[in-house]
Amino acid sequence: MEKSATRPVILIAVLVFVAGLAFAIFTQHIWEDYWITFRASKTLATGNGLVFTPGERLHTFTSPLGVLLPAAFYLLTGNHSDQVALWLFRVASLAFLSGGLILFFQSLRALQLRNFSIGLTLALIGLDAKILDFSINGMETGLLIFFLALTIHGLFVAGPRQVLRLGAGWAGLMWSRPDSCVYIAVLGAGSLFFLTKMAGKNDDQATPIWLKNLLKAAVVCTILYLPWFVWAWWYYGSPIPHTIVAKGANQPPLHLVDMLGSLVVFPYELLFVYNTSLPYTFLPGYADHGGWAGGYVSLAYVLGSIAALAWVVPVFRPQTRLLSLGYFMGNFYLNDILNYFPPWYLPVVGTLGYLTLGLLFDQTLGLALKFPQLGWNRGWFARLPEILRAAAVVLVLGQLAATVCVARQLHVQQAVIEDGMRQPIGLWLRDHAKTPHDSVMLEPLGYIGYYSGLKMLDYPGLASKEMVEARKRLGPAHQNQVYRELKPDWLVLRPFEVQRETYVDAAGLRECYDQVQVFDATDKLKAIGWLPGRPYVQFDQTFIIFHRKADADQKPPG
View 1 (cartoon, rainbow, N blue to C red):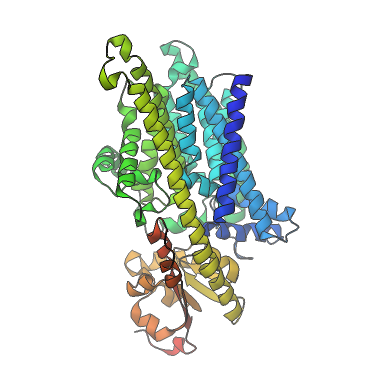
View 2: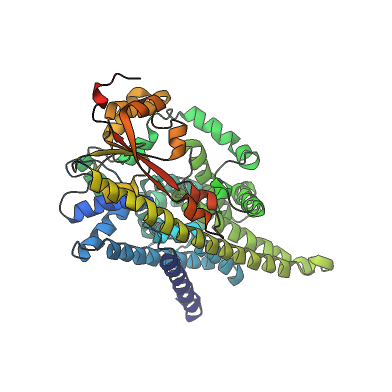
């Protein structure tokens, strides 16, 4: 690499790493799902198998690397420190994120983007609150961004080991999150349509050559990912994570005709149906709970719409259209196949969107710089390049401001809800359980499941085969009767779950359970003045604990 290109690469890596480290130190944020995964990591490190509950071979995590790396880091501590293991994982994840930004830099330079456009693109990615947070809170996002960057590097940058780069990127995505096969398929198939000229031959030869390269990359991916696939199938009886099985229980089956029909109308949904994932790819996590300025949300919606539909415009770069297609199909996957879009699914989709916007900006800026040659050098036309650059700077400053706001939100979330509520609930249950085999039914599995160490009957059943089987037997209309079959010793419910009878019906709750404890942070949150995204934090401000009555089994059903 030339020295002129080395300096900005090093600067990008250092800035992103330091920004992520500062975010972690200030917020101390540990994601709920990390403790679900780390319970299996710790069980593996202590010699009891890669399981959530010793003796139950259940695939209770999604990311292979997300469970194996924390297990390795816990071993490095001598199996003595959860926090050191987490911080080692944070540092590794930030290193992967920084490496991903370097690969994006190289890919954008290969496309001959202007330095200003490259800086804009990388700043939007590196300062995105979700990307930073899910790279330091125990999730696998830093790894995902790196392997996505390696995939795009393999697609856009010709030269030695291009097939190996592409195949390794695909394999890394699968090792980081198996549903990455969606993005692998979209980018691979889309490259056949948009990038065949990159093969360096005439049009008649380009497609066969590029198809051959994709097939070679698929072989590399298969070789690198197959060991995990085979081992998981042998160990758990299925290569499909139980988390996916649990989330898909009682969902209607997918039919190809219906999916194609949904795909046809999806552009209309993106433009005119406001509750899609589109704006939230650029917004803070759980922004759909409210608490963010309407103008901010609207801007995210407009930028998302532009990025999602750029692939249909022939005048844009082939690479721009490919990235736009990936962003479009990523949103389709979240909305019409998964039917939900939790924030840890959004960073990969959002990154494709930011890359699309960066390439669009560069092409627009290039056109504006040509206006004087066309005689359009009067009024605001003469100053359009400066206007575009100023708008880009404002956009980056807005991204930074939003991330600062999210840091404040998550600092409060961690201190008041996670450390002040859910961790103490887990410890309280551990101390009050009659036996280590007491069972607990609840929705928020992570903190409470980890710190209680008890048998968890979580909803929808991420760590409980019994929950999934009971839900399937009863069907979606009677899922609040599951507890009657499973008879958990403890229930941990939010007030609205009790009121709406989400997981239990009122009659059975009254007959079979006693309310024994309430954990409530309502007053603490009210006393906090500045709290961006307050509704999300308030969602978990109160939990009620119920204990099963001694004579519950003798009472007839209500």
